[in-house]
Image 1 (cartoon, rainbow, N blue to C red):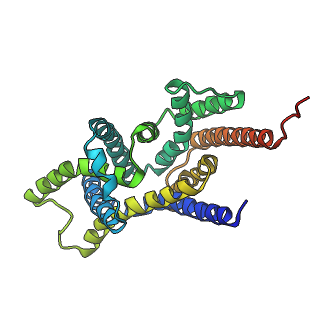
Image 2: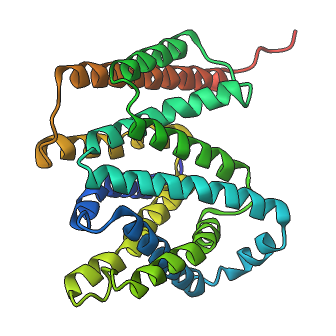
Image 3: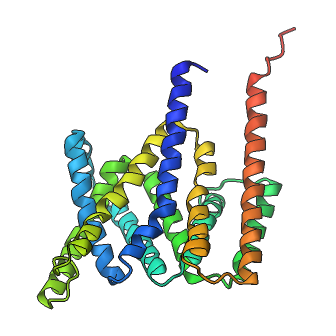
Length: 304
């Protein structure tokens, strides 16, 4: 491997760890705004994310990537669908943290990779190996033990289908996220205007601390995404697959050790089954990847 490639991979791993580590720590931020209604937090997250992303596009001179999408009805339709899923995912997560359900939220993101696999099989016609089927069955048993908590299911399904749509839409991550937030901005501003008319808005209520926390939602949303984008450009997809378990692992530890959420025996057993499923799937994928690499390295048979 060339020195430049090794340097790029090291940068990619660092960006990936920072991205997923940031997503893992994000419950700490939402705990800071847990006294504000989740819908209002979501509205502020949309508005300030849009402004922050707009500043980034201006600074990096990437607005030329936005205009073609605005002229395509199919791209806008796909983004409208992905925007709906994104808003549902954001709201559900904000609600989960404010309702002290971070364990269930982390479970949703543990399940997300396995839901992606199911989508690949059912909708994309992909095939699974034996051990991968076993891991799906174990994860399903874990979810069944938990009674399929609604928060986890909504988070896993919304983010998985969001990823499926964004995989198919012809636009890069940063300009795509800007357009998604742009589609939500009118609703967000309308809701915030409604609260202001009722004199029931948390923002500009006289507390600089509250204002600063709500303003920070734009940075909290955009920075991990930008780090993830940088990692995705430098790393293999399989490497990113391993790193993505960092976020829900950190969230789970925060829920148990910092937020002191109750952890019953059933939850422990269920999480153990899900983690075992993840380990089986990951090891099987790594083994298959190594096998494919060896086949590529073996010399072709000589012609007789």
